Image 1: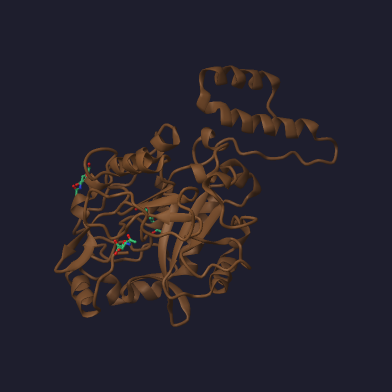
Image 2: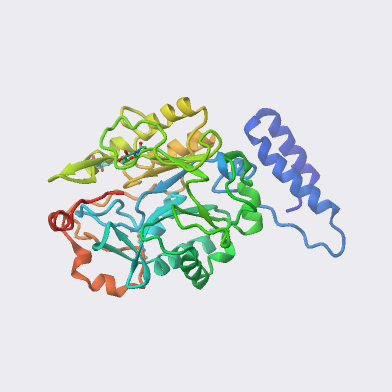
Length: 379
Ligand SMILES: *[C@@H]1O[C@H](CO)[C@@H](O)[C@H](O)[C@H]1NC(C)=O
Ligand SMILES: *[C@@H]1O[C@H](CO)[C@@H](O)[C@H](O)[C@H]1NC(C)=O
Ligand SMILES: *[C@@H]1O[C@H](CO)[C@@H](O)[C@H](O)[C@H]1NC(C)=O
C-alpha cells in the first residue's frame, strides 16, 4: 500500500500524541519505503494495515500478543458434562477466539476429535474440523490464528501433515526457521499476514523437525496447571520442556468441579471465571501472572468463552493495549434445555456423528458413561 505524503504526514502527527501507534506507523513507513523504491519490474508489496482487528497489532511480535483460546473447542453442546463450549467453531472465531485447542485421537486409523474417549464425545474428524478453519481463514485474510493439538494417541506428525495438506492448510502455516523461538523472536503479526503464513500450529507431543510448521508446544510454551478446582488459579509452571524465562506461556483458566466424583466444567461459575475482574476471574489471574512472571500470558484458554459477554476478549485487549469494541456482540450463552446437547456442531460434513445416539448424551448419561469408562478427564 502506497501512502500519500499527506496521509503520511497526518499519521506522523497522530504519532506525536499516541505512543502506541508508533509500531503501526513504523509498519506503514516500511510499506511506504518498499513501495517507493519499487521500479518497473517490482510488484507492489501488499502490507496489512489492520492485524487481528487492530492497526496497533501489526508491528507487534506474535510472542508478545495475548490471544483468547477455546479449550476443547470441538467439544460443543449444552446439558452435556463432556463439553467445554456451546458455540460452533465459526462462531468462536467470529467472536474473537484466536487459539483453538483440541484433543486428537486415532479412531480406526482416522484422526478424530474426541473428548477423553470417542464413545464419550465424538466431535468429528480432524479433516472436517480443519475444513471449517480453512474456510474461515480464507474469508478473514488479516487474522493470525493458532491451533493447539493434544496428540493424545501419539500419532506421527506425518499423519497430521497429510490432513493439513488435504485441506490446504499447510500452505498458510507458519514454519519457524528454527525451533524453539523465544517469546521475543517471533515475527510480527503484520509480517505473518503479509507472507500469508498466518496459521500457527502446536503439537503437545510428536512434533518432527522434518515438518517444521507442526511446532513442538512445550519447548516453545509453558503452561499453568489444568483441571483446576481452586478458583484462585495460581501462576506456577506446571508443564514445560524449555526455559520458562524466555518462552511464551499459556494459562489454563477454566474451572472444574466434581460431579459424582468426576471432574466436569463448572458452568455455573463460568460468568465469574471468565470475568475481567473479581476473585477467581480471568482478569485476576492475568494480573497475578503478570506480576509473578514480569510479562503477561500469551494464551488465555477458557471454557464457554461467551459467558461474561465478551469479558475474555476485554482481558486480552487490555493486555494488548487496544480498545475492545466489537461491531456485533458476542454470542449469548445457549440456554440449558435448548435441546442441542452434545451435537458436534463443528461441521456439516460428518453425518456419521449426527446419526450416532452417543453424540447426544444427556448430562446424566455422560456422567454414567464416564463412571463406566473410569476417570473422566476434563482436559
Ligand atoms: C454456527 O452457529 C451460528 C450461530 O448460532 C449459526 O448461525 C451457524 O449456522 C452455525 N454454523 C454451522 C456450520 O453450524
Ligand atoms: C500439573 O497439573 C496437574 C493437573 O492439575 C497436576 O496433576 C500435576 O501434579 C501438576 N504438575 C506439576 C508439576 O505441578
Ligand atoms: C451469565 O450472564 C448472562 C448475561 O450476563 C446470563 O444471561 C447468564 O444466565 C449467566 N449465566 C450464569 C450461569 O450465571
